[in-house]
Image 1 (cartoon, rainbow, N blue to C red):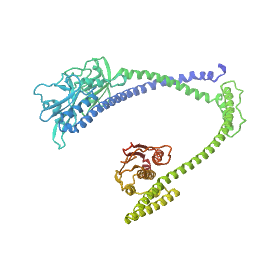
Image 2 (image 1 turned 90 degrees about the vertical axis):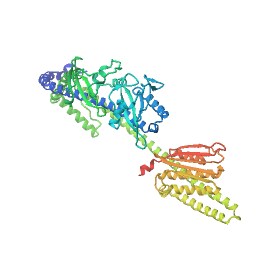
Image 3 (image 1 turned 60 degrees about the horizontal axis):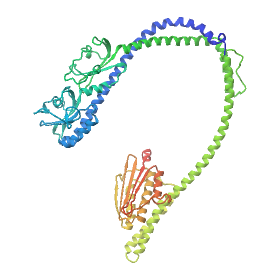
Image 4 (image 1 turned 135 degrees about the vertical axis):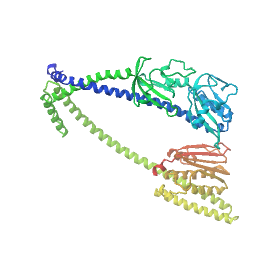
Length: 601
């Protein structure tokens, strides 16, 4: 260790006293005033942010009620007043939202009331009303007729239960546009109070919601009350007569609470309610004032360090050692491996020189190790490239083998069946014989074309077509007719649109050919049903027959039959399912990704 009296640190302390004396006075004068104003601005922004948070939560709550009301109003059960279905729907919705939703009901235009709910005031989920109860006379019904759209009533005393609450209402019309009644969703003020109580405002802030007459609907100042009042109370914690005159946050004093509050207010356009967020002024401002003092101290320290840097670096204590270090670094950069920093100094720069020289040695050693690793990695990359080339050749071989099996195999199957039919009718039906020979010629020509296509590798561009569905339909139908098999064909694709990417289209055609070959060879079916559709980049194929069933995916027959199809689907990243009970026919379901079409477009 460098001795205290020889270190740079000891000489720095001598300059430090002068720097503090010069700057501390100015910092105390100018910083305190500006930071105090900034603290007040931040407090107001915090108040506004709390207001936005509160109003957003309330907007979300009423938007959820509106969404539910509009969804219920669209149900035929509500339009046609089907009470059995209405009851099931209402109880399910109330149960899902029972923490704040008491009941849902429909008051009809002819004065009938259908209400169901959960909680006090309900017997078997139904309320008990006074005789001659008429929903048309209730405030919520009148509110809906007055607004003509979704709205929220002012708090009122419920008829079936002695408690205050509000009702979200929406007029209901049938399919002909005739008025049916008013849909109502009841929320107890007690439950609304619980919901608002969960609003977490920073700095122990409180939320108050007042109606148009400045009566308290809910207030976090009343958390200790039971929330079961039957009459709204007038807000008296502080004077709110001048709320409308203040567009920004402002400070008000509550004589009842003995505290000052930073107030932000807004009005909910949907209900006309006043939303007030009150932040305790002391908790908002006083911590900021205390932080101002800490900031001043921090600025003083930063200024001290700045003075240290300016004074110390401007003399020979630092300039000379740094110049030596820079010269060594520059020489090292141009490749001089022998240069070293002088180690004869007794201070920290001497320690730095010794450590720097050790670092140079370590870097040289590390450089040699890296060169060896690069050689090894290069050799490994060459080996991997060779292996990759070998695997690609194998993959290309398997691809060509699969195409030969799917395309030429299907053509040869057709030729074989056509030849068998031709032999049977050679002396009986000249027209059938001619048709079979024509089929043999057609399949032979197509087989030659497929072979050329495979050898040329033009499996994508040359097969591009916009009548893909019609071509597949005609191909499958003509093949099945060889054994008098009926085809039921369903496609949700537009035959005039090129919706399937070329790669998937080619594989899809090969799979369909192989499935048809399996039916002709093994199924003994009389009917075949084909259905395919394209949904969200997924091509779905369902291929079923009413044959003998019992088809299995034999992994030993790799590249053949259902096993070959399953392998092809897996390579494309798709899904393959087969259901083939004995005597119950066979059904194959295939899902193929079609992402290439969108990328191509």
